[in-house]
Length: 118
Image 1 (cartoon, rainbow, N blue to C red):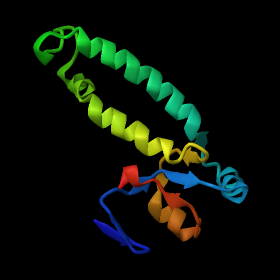
Image 2 (image 1 turned 90 degrees about the vertical axis):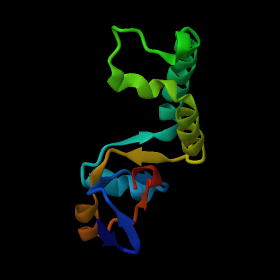
Image 3 (image 1 turned 120 degrees about the vertical axis):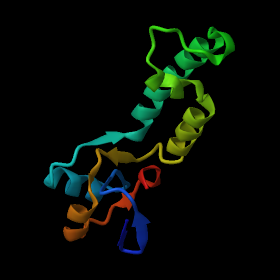
């Protein structure tokens, strides 16, 4: 566990929120990929609706044998919905691919951490 600039994290990488054109310019300068949050929400909402239909057809919350137990988290739709709701608060911004937090700190990048990664 590390303490960096006043926050504690178990992760060595995180995604960041880009709120300004200056943030996006810095991300481009350092070849950090980023995505429009509203586009991510659109994809996730479609997947959420598909998962709801899938779950509705599962008997006794037991996955069919052809689906790996590693995918059992698809049955926890409330967590999926909570994640989408958290993203909606950021719908007008962009989110980066995960980047090394120490590297970002060394460059003194002014980006806000995406709290879902902590």
